[in-house]
Length: 235
Image (tube, rainbow, N blue to C red; front, side, top):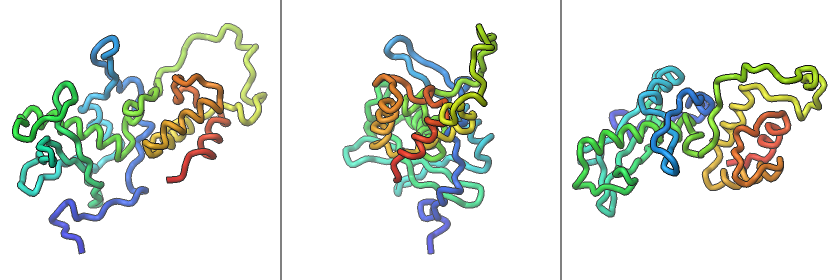
């Protein structure tokens, strides 16, 4: 029997019990830092925590202490890392998720030189990366995919009469609902990293996209969903 007083020995949740938050974030949740080639999109850790509270109630982020009782662990080469995990409302515990303690250049910091600020910064970063790995929350930013824009174009079409109605379109060209688009993006986000790039390149080739084109905005029609469901590799 597992020792329930030790978090690392609690039973892991089944995949179906973990909330799937792959389609939760929108461009309203995304901030930017830096400029030019150093510009990066991110979701503030406070917003990540808020989205978890709203969409995964009862799930809490934790840091696993090392055998020495410290929240900072020492790697074999003397650098530092923390170990995060989530606990669920029914006693679930997700697998350990390690996160390196890094400086502002993303270089690892030596265990003996870790400051309180280094630890708290890494704690927040681990919250965000573990949430992406566990729930799919904001996976698009880590995979460099486009994020759904919550705002709709309010400008009238130049010639509405010229546009074909949905009923006139072939089945494969009919537009996807927002829910179906989110499902497609979640399928892609849950692919193993080793297979994700190849899968995205195959999608681009199948639908005539350039090698650098973003895939998420191109997922619009039934044919795209059918292709994704048919060709997504089985884990």
